[in-house]
Length: 297
Image: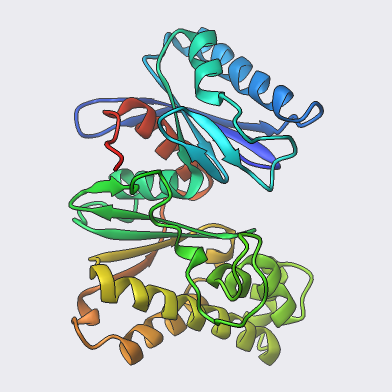
């Protein structure tokens, strides 16, 4: 299940060797009527209903839009979902209700895992996943597996500093990539009400909209250049709602890579759009729930 501030998206997958198969997908509006309590109850009800319709599960994964404790299975900070989320034992409550193991994962890391296994990252030994939307998220595949660091936070692509004295970010830092390339920053730069209208205007020749998308792509390219200097990944996969801009973002991103990275041959790095669309986060959460517990530390 992929928990968002607007929707909970869920998928059921069946593991068949190295090729998991998606059996069902759906989404419902997130029930925040009683804060975190109604949200957790909704997750349990959705899983129970799906199990009743499709057969018993062996595991459950929940993608969360924020920080969590991977060992305790508790949420720490989720600014875009109404409720008091500090220390909520989401995994334990889901596990107790359903009688199967349940594990949490950050939603951008879930996206990265899904795209690596089933989408645009297939076959890559190392990969940077980027999600563009309300925020800017990310995840890392290293040595063919998802790398999460000692506490599940590795891969927070959007919270690297791009402008040291730049705008304040919700994380507490200033000048993070997220404040420069998230959806509301892009629409403001493009002078349009929404990302979709920004993309439409740019394609229709609106110079302000074109420049706004170019600037966002350039900021993303600086961020990817930093990652390349440290990790030299094989592939970069860009998803999320803002990624609908396609080459209007990816072109400037690639140009920054070529302009800034000289220690490795960036012509060998594939920079591509994601393939799994809106279900990537839920697919990745299910894969994470079914996998061996990761080692942290």
